[in-house]
Amino acid sequence: MRRLSENHQAGASLSDVKLSRVLLLFRPYVGQLTFILLLSLAATLAGLAAPLATKELVDQAIPQKDAGLLLLFAGLMAASPLVKGVLNVWQTHLNNKVGQSVMRDLNDRLFRNLQRQSMSFFTRSRTGEIVQRISGDVQAVQGAITGTIVTAITQLVTLIATVVILLRLDWRLALVSMVVIPALLLPARRIGALRKSLRLRVQTLRGEMSSHLSETFGVSGALLTRIYGREEAQVRKFGEMNDTVKSMELRLGLIGRWYGMAAGVSNPVATAIVYLYGGWLVIHGGLSIGSVIAFAALTGRMYEPVSGLLGVHLDLSAAMGIFQRIFEYLDLKPEVADAPNAQPLQRGGGLVAFEGVSFAYASGGAAVLKEIDLTARPGQLLALVGPSGAGKTTLAGLVGRLYDPTKGTVRIDGRDVRGVTLASLREQIGYVTQEPFLFYGTIADNLRFAKEDATLAEMESACRQAYIHDVIAGLPQGYDTKVGERGHRLSGGERQRIAIARAILKNPRILVLDEATSHLDSRSEAYVQEALDSLMAGRTTIAIAHRLSTVRAADAIAVMDRGRIVELGAHEELLERDGLYAKLYRTQFAETPAGAAE
Ligand code: ADP
Image 1: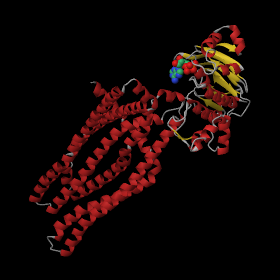
Image 2: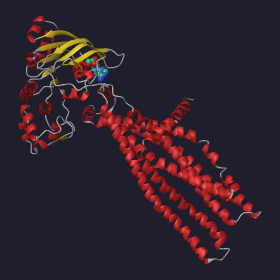
Image 3: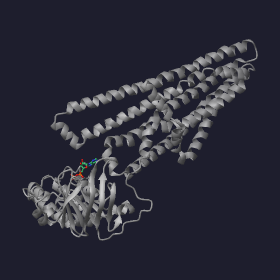
């Protein structure tokens, strides 16, 4: 019962709206498609010449004992498939070209739309699933895109042309030759719906497999798997998914095969019926043997497009399951986007103010920030401290609109950040995260991520300020050294300093700094500190502080606890108060003067 309703649903959403949306993907290529259609029409007509020539050869050339006519018709019979073949190769190539273009467009649009998404989308989605949709799913509709649409139209043209010729040859025989068709059409819809829902499930599972892969073979996942000796368990989990995909693919294939077989059998059955009735007509006079032979050949030509079209229907049904997933990603709306009347944020002093800011990650979910009022003054250092989970990272993220507050306003130089363009806002904010990420590529590439047209001199100057230039210059390939997937060939401190150099290159007005909690040796620590000092100079900095030196240097310290600011003041002041800060100071900061642990 459940399966039935599932299928019914799948069938219902396989509606015209969706199909028309698939067709819209072809809109830029209407001109090319028209030409392809003309080509295939010409190929069809060329192909139809052969049986007609056969008829004339049997009915005229042979009875009239005319060698000239015999040669002409035999020649036509040979030339017809040749012309058809050549035209088909040309047509197929152009068709492929359109299909590949549509796929490229689809990939581009998907990538572009995913790039527009806010952080909430990425914290919600698994990387493997995203990769699967943008590469796997688009790849999986290739068959439908390159084959289906044009095939459908050419098959339809062939079918109509053949039926017209059949009807003109002999309408009674023509009708008899078509009796098998309704039997083929009846189950088509149901089978299509079944294939669609199965395909959707297979692709969903493939997304999960892809996520499983990216997690287990990512550096952190691989490490965890080895540490806990879970290799076999991972293999088993993957194997189970693999088995399910296999059996579902087999089911999908089988559903198509049985039906394909039925379509294949219909042709000889119909041909036999034509010979039976045609033969009867010849015996009782009124029809030539040549006509019956031509008719039988044309019947074959009619069933070819009929089974072709049914095949198209099946392919398209399955592909609709995949298109559903693709369109879902194309329709994603970013939660944080430019307001319609957004203005660029002018470069001002860099005053950051939170006014009555509350925030929850899920709508209606628990508030992670509650009624925060806080100001970071231009050029000053505001340190956020507090126990883990207090909301420091979340609060810092609101400055660059990684998320928007549920209530209240974040202002920069008096402007509500929701009223300015994201590009201009982010241009003025630099983030240095706890675990700096480096893309696979050269060090120079990674630096240019902050400033595309940065010259070598600019990069060197930034790296000097970040106390990393000497390290880079000492590498055999200098700034052209490739850094691994996560910059794994560099030490933690070096990676942090490259991230700092990157932020210096960007030269933002406002800096959001999430200090690393991991210990660095005191030499690295000193270098990182120097680098940070250069970076913070003259900028408004909001630092999630884990170092004693940072809280000491801070102009103001905001102590957060469970989403609220519970204390606000300078280091000495807060120590005197002997509240949460003093407690944190004793546990977090004082005992580890060089580094700090959380
Ligand atoms: P801190 O930086 O002070 O350790 P966070 O800002 O990271 O605190 O987290 C504050 C709270 O928000 C925590 O309870 C955390 O579990 C929750 N949280 C953080 N990120 C998300 C997220 N993407 N979705 C839902 N909850 C989150």
